[in-house]
Image (cartoon, rainbow, N blue to C red; front, top):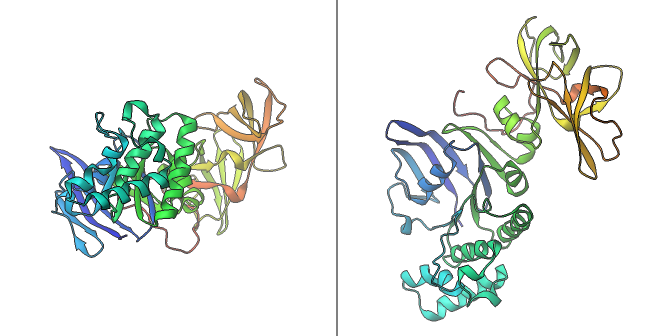
Length: 374
């Protein structure tokens, strides 16, 4: 196992800057997930750690060793790719053992490592099959097994589940989480799927346009996003956003007037905000409730999406930038076209300024915020 330290990492392709001053520390044994929209630099960042892309500037350390200019084979890493990258003419056993053979390991050592990894991953009965005879999940486990036998100091995963169907992705998430617990090895996992990030990570790194927006535990990022981008990216369905203006701001409570004229009180705003300051109010679907006697907005139901234990209700209101999403109980009885008054929980609101920054007070702690200015 080993820690990872990135300092001031820059990478450009031609005139296009892909990574811009990345600073990141991954602790020994930590499961860190890097998330962000397509094209934000996630895979490029992982490939620089692996040595598959040379950095233009900065330092990469694995443990105490500066590996910035070392070839991939000398970095002590193993990478699992989205496409599996298996040799189609080789058996599972041969695919898993190939790297050890190239490294000059003895046949006995190779056999012991391959069979131990196969047992861990449930591949023992499949060792003589070729990739075309395997399911998507079995191919992915083979690719992971090939990484395990190398006994790397750090595992790198580049969107390893994106080619699998929904039910298999859930199963493989459990497999990878169990593997991390068993191996106790440092893992860095890239995905665009924030659900994978929330369920797997010890710590999440949110990347946008080559810069880190925020790092923290899944709970920290969900509960205390530092800006509107993180608030909208973490959580499914996404946070609701409503535009308005400050009416009155006291040390602990700010009143916001929405487009419809509705008055919403927000608890915990940092400092006083001048009247008429434009703000965006953020509220998650589970923090809306039907009815009440304060913080109310009038809506019309556009769609009810029943999911058994709960329903997602899509609401039309002039206050929301897009349709408002409300998480209701599974026995929600209203229908499309009905009018519905919903209450916004004052202590669960977020307020974002014109620059997108969160204006509410944060708890004291070690939240890491944006490295870039977007």
